[in-house]
Length: 515
Image 1 (tube, rainbow, N blue to C red):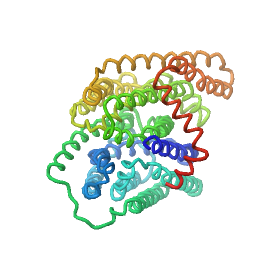
Image 2 (cartoon, helix red, strand yellow):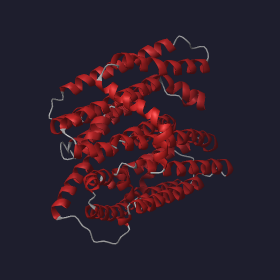
Image 3 (cartoon, one colour):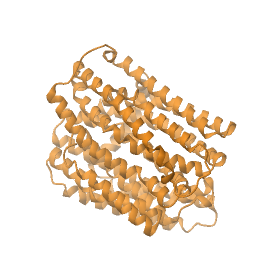
Image 4 (spheres, one colour):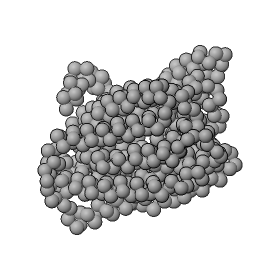
């Protein structure tokens, strides 16, 4: 049942994401040619600022989803109601906090932009970004129970419909009015509508959510919940600082135009990360269910399978990005928007190092190891800001991304797998690091080999992109297959893929659509 739920979540997540990827690139292209790179930079900057403000979220989403695994498995309606009541009250408070902090930043906006800007009504634009962020806190909390119940495919289908409709309207507004404020207003309307619709769907799936009740957690349960929440807050602060400050540092030390250039790369990276994220995020609830019901050996095997899939997917993507990022940007919007290969290396390294943490992060979150090493994320945040500022002044934009990589290697890289192996598997973590080093070496060989062969054909851009694409699709996958074809992890995944390809056309799709 866990595998079937995961496959449903993955299929619908990927299907909708594929369509939204295509439309996202169309919207971005029209955005650049109608509004310009400076507007793109401002959008990237404000998105990062609002990401920082989501510190007020305090990690409630992860804590609540983790807390719901057991009562859902045991069908404990009273406890579910108590948790959802707490969630609702917390998110309403969080919305107010985000609004107040966001408004306090208004006077300081000019100091976050290096140099003059020609964009009019920049404060109005920021306020619209703020409203878009705050509005979600009043409707989104009911998504937690759907996700924890391994039914994320329902949210994926709804999100796909709304994101596609929103993109179509944005294209029409950009071409028809060229007014960024109108486009932002439309985004707000669609986001609120989507969250309200999902909340109503949750009420329909779980009717006891609509029933008025006074269900509440006991003092001991609240104490445990808030202890986990405090540890999650520290992780949330670190994660947001590590992922959310890049654009702010670039804007302050280099300029908003550089943020606009990077946002094109970030669009590709974010799209790819979101696409991959649907695969791993779709199985998170299943891993949580696994923790409740299975023994340590079963958990360890599934961890190995998850890590192997993690390595293959992110390794393959890293090879593709190294070989295709600049050629694709050049073909898409022009040579003037292309970064140097050293900057591209730092971007790809940041992507790969973050992606390789997925398996250990998933197990840490779903097994409730929030309190172990809870202050290390704060150390990571300080390292990230300090090293990024030092390196951006010495080597430019690449220094921002290398600072992020260094902070991650100093903290999450070694500690997350350490606590998972110690407290969940009761095994030495040495085998993990040996496997990690071996994985990095294989990806490096695949990237160099692909790039070397592709460099032979450099006469024509389109031909070069075509050859690089073919080489990226074949060399890393063949290399990975030759090395790992006899491993237990590969055989397990191969059986799942074989079952998926044989069952989806006739059975799985039909069941999923009627779920």
